Length: 496
Image (cartoon, rainbow, N blue to C red):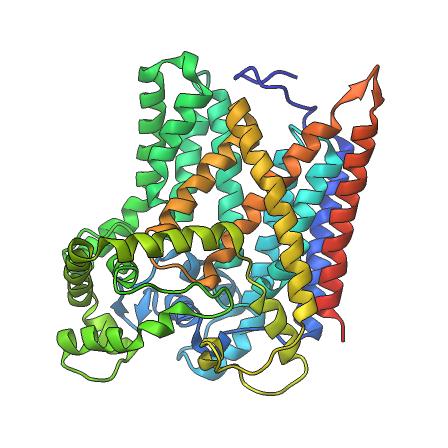
């Protein structure tokens, strides 16, 4: 079949086999998640490292406000609190929010996140099955939903599982929209809305429009610059329309133009202070503790940090971070550029394995996870180094395949590879120019799933006189080995 952009597509994923495989994939992801949630202790709040997301979601369910009781906040994006509020409303929120209630409600949230992960896996499979053979498409969905890192994210009271779903939906919608432009304009508007909603979960994709322009310009060069400009405008207007109600709310409660949340300059400021080493299993923000207290004292007059005071002086603190960041950039630009390069390298090469090792550790102890465990040299010896190295090796192998996928995508300028490569560029830039933490490395999962397995699928399509070539059979064997490795590592994660 030939799409509107002249791109070859396989038969529609509505076929009986693909539907059966999609159902099997969903059940597989949900089965692993259900076993983990019912039989294993979850990472939860990471000792408070995950911030106050569950409190914000519960407050929205009880008081209808993203903030503290009836006091609205600008500090956090609204997407994940809104996601939390839905299952809590279904389950029935209490009149008063307590720590005990948040603990009791956690399984409801984890179940919703398991559904989100399963939906992301199935959507990825259905999308890729339109352009590559089902074994590689299925393996891509399997990796996304069943790999051990994803399983730990299901039991984490933070946004990664939801954001992964938003990214997959956004990649599918954008790839579909570009393929049909200009014959059909509605898909481009839909893509803008989807990415707007993803931005309300994490605002890093506020930088996406220029990359969409480049994507359209290179993938549809015969359309002309005017058509590309119109398509980009349609995308931007739809994306803005999805974000605008929240921006209007922020203006109404503060009199400030805040598109999503008020924290951007704090992250830029952190990258301008001093050279920060990147340690994938440690939280870099702790190294800035004295500097944060210094700014906090200067703005609030209080020598000790507390969240309520920080939120009260959120706007003033952001202004202080902005002023100091700009001064640092003028006086010591090399410091910032060095941190940018290290963050870029970390996002490309590093893998989060601490969640896996911590997950194994908490199964063997009743100890409460503490924030200090994520400071270099202050945490317990977690063990499970073999599991961490094995998953890191798998991620590295997929990273090499992804590099090949990016090269193929840039050469062909079509299909999921090209779309995913351009969107990956947005994330590389957004995370590099601001503060980078190991907790952000989960964003690689959807990109690895597409960029690593689509090239294998394209190789597998090669035949000789209608008979699969040796290369095709070798690709199927490699795909099966990768899928088996994913399942084996997850079994090791969940073992007694």
